Length: 146
Image (cartoon, rainbow, N blue to C red):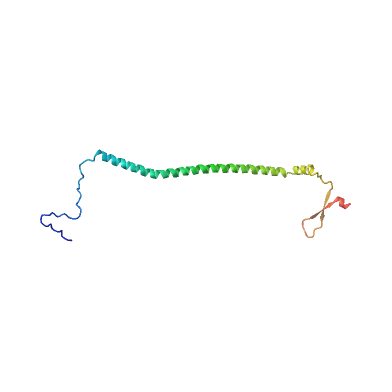
């Protein structure tokens, strides 16, 4: 460590490093206007900071609620569409059952196509099987035999 240089003559020596601040606070009170300005400035800053944080959060919340409402309308539309398709499917099934009923087919054949029921009887005979366990049938028309 080096020794501090000595003062030359009557010139006082001041070191280059800063002096230590006084340890006790100043007893002089702050003016009333200064404290109000500091408080209002800090409140203004707090208000600006909170608005910068809360405004995007409010927008996110609003957009989320809008998406929920839009999706609920879409779900309702799809449920209505499902019900309409179920009703249409039921109507088609009923119409198919009506169209394929034997009574309807017979009435259409007789009324619109002028068909009649056959008057010829058919005989069913069994042919001798060639090692086949199930009988084979041949339909013979009675008119052909005569």
